[in-house]
Image (cartoon, rainbow, N blue to C red):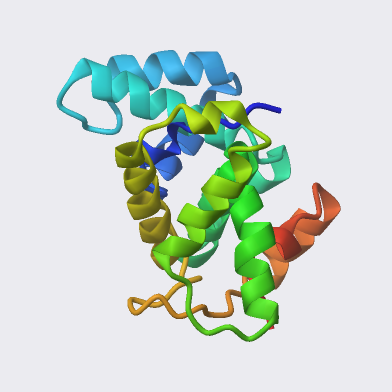
Length: 192
């Protein structure tokens, strides 16, 4: 599987995800959601290219959620919405999902207290042997990915402002939904 690398230009965008999910619940068709969200600029971006790019990327992410997770999202509090956005990011971008399940979870379970940007940089270097497309990306883009990823990790509270690893616990209802579906919460949420 090729790594999808376009996450570097976005954040979790929880509010924007809410707007897109509400539109999806009305239209029940992702292509119609993309078209209407772009046409109506429901996310409020200034340029047409930004609108198209962000709407497209968000729809790609949110398609990774099950219908049950999407329905729950519309009723969930900010805490669980943020966790669902993180889950969609981990499922969409194998680089993020693999880094989380391999490096973050191992560090967390081995009681390593901090995560540094170098952990991600070394991970990317190791992955270049398996995925040639990673060897083609510039150091500048890797730096952007690091910045965006660490921002997301702080948003979902896996990292503190001082890059300390923290336990994250989605609600019981959300964990049950994930368990009934892909059952991958244990890969992406460090829980104690």
